[in-house]
Length: 326
Ligand code: NDP
Image (tube, rainbow, N blue to C red; front, side, top):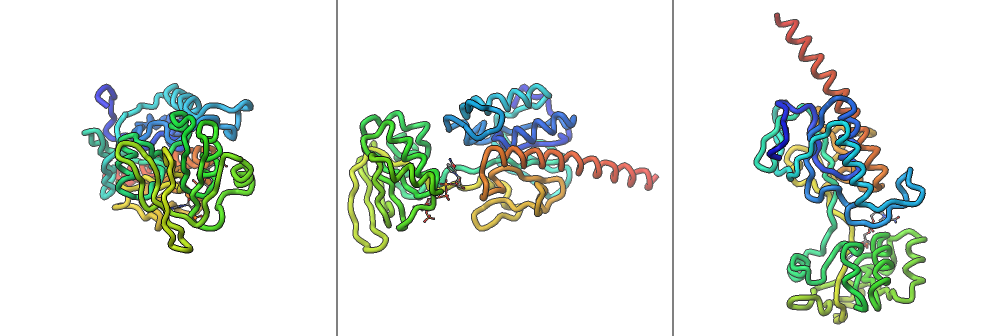
């Protein structure tokens, strides 16, 4: 952040740079709020690890995820948005203006917009984590890593739209893709199910969970258990892709804000406002229902407009109070 000129206090600090964070920054910048944006754990968010985006309005031929995010970033910059390439480690909402800490800096903020999104969920097995961190064949991003598995047998864990999409995508490279589904049915939409079920290279193994990931330096197989019969087995695969949903990145905020049982930040009905005045949440951090780039962008817009109006009223009230006390 060293080359950024900070205001004291900032009118708005935006945390996160997915479609929600960028759209909030765009509206805030155009509202003369001079937003300071913290990039977050994955600058650009989840669309940075996807390929074609065909459902974002305005791109009849589709657009690559990273390209879309780069354009959003540039659009915000055009109106004076400042970016801090840091992760926010801590916030303090106990007194106003609020405090946002990250990258060794402590920033005072009159309003805060949280748009930290969600990250891929893992099974939580020790060998899974080891082989994921070492790049040994455990991944949650088929579009990022699929290319490395030419002619290899792979497993995809999960039965939702993501799992069907990832499994279908991986058949471009893999010789065979096993979908490991913990129940006897898929959660995925009918159209996505059909795509997976009609693909000759995909075999679904029902009622099955992964108990362990096998392999020293790279995945050689999976230890499985049948959830109905309790029968254990081993599946020889060269890689495991997780598609079992996402976890909201709400950790630094849980001390201050109510979250639901899955960790999503709760906002007031129909608003981006949280229970703390001047603190707003937008995008996947507060939406476990739609989770689309366009809905995240829409809620980012709501958050910025609400922040602008809230701050205007707050500053008017403070000015009136100061006048009255003279
Ligand atoms: P979902 O929550 O829809 O599905 C998660 C899947 O993982 C379910 O099959 C679930 O099983 C399974 N699962 C969860 N935890 C475990 C576990 N510990 N072990 C094994 N399996 C597990 O997540 P998705 O990421 O698939 O989708 C999220 C949202 O994004 C949805 O709304 C979806 O429609 C949307 N989406 C849309 C796409 C598109 O339209 N192109 C593409 C991708 C996502 P169970 O069913 O038993 O709970």
